[in-house]
Image (cartoon, rainbow, N blue to C red; front, side, top):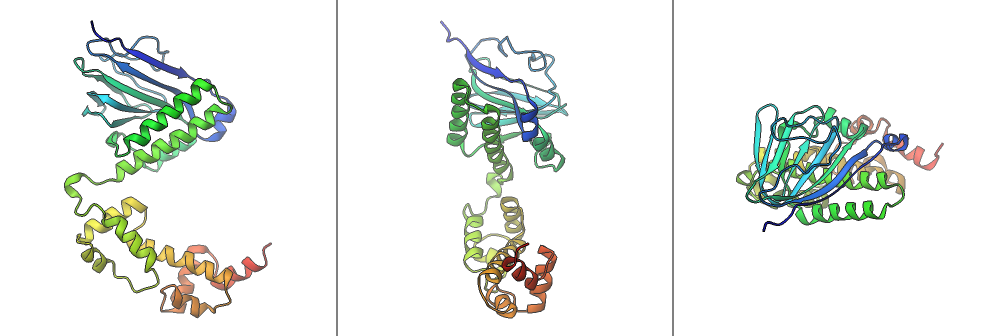
Length: 298
């Protein structure tokens, strides 16, 4: 006798409040698909149901996470990926796709469908792309715990449920984005190089830091270091250093009586005029104006 498949899911009506939130949830669920059983299970509404032969096109987004089992994912144009435990795959609006567990193994899947101005903005800014829709997550415990909390919230029918689920989805997509930025294993020259570099820059931002020398001291090539650092932080190493210096300079301007020249020197800018020019360029006001505004707010 074979084990039976089980599933639990919800589909949600969307209010104007949910749309105004910027991210709303269309469906949440999980399914344990036993070996040698039909897939997908019946009962899903039109617009979400699909079969392997025809696949499906969604109007919104969905995140599917496979906690156990194996299967196959396909999407247009001509993308195919084997799905292993710990994999997640993203589904995008108007992109054809299909997926199914291995018939001899089955799988345990978790999903959340969503839409709204926020995910549409992610797509416009190319933070996520159908070209990179399958990802190996390195935070499986966190993902599983998040989906567990989601299901608990749904079963408890908590007030403002949509907003609770939107927050959880934001968290999940942050983990997806982090996994997307991670380098393939064969490219990792030093697993802690970026963490070490960030700590070094934060502790020594006022010193004359040479980023190429820092990369050499960490045992990595500068090209790899710059690319990976930018993927982790959104800033190049030099930009990161400058932003730290400006944050510290702004604090000194508002909290001390130090002169502009003294603040420039204490934050790693040897040239007072370069400091003032950069400060104005980044913050759209001069150091003196910043100090005045902090003490005489409008």
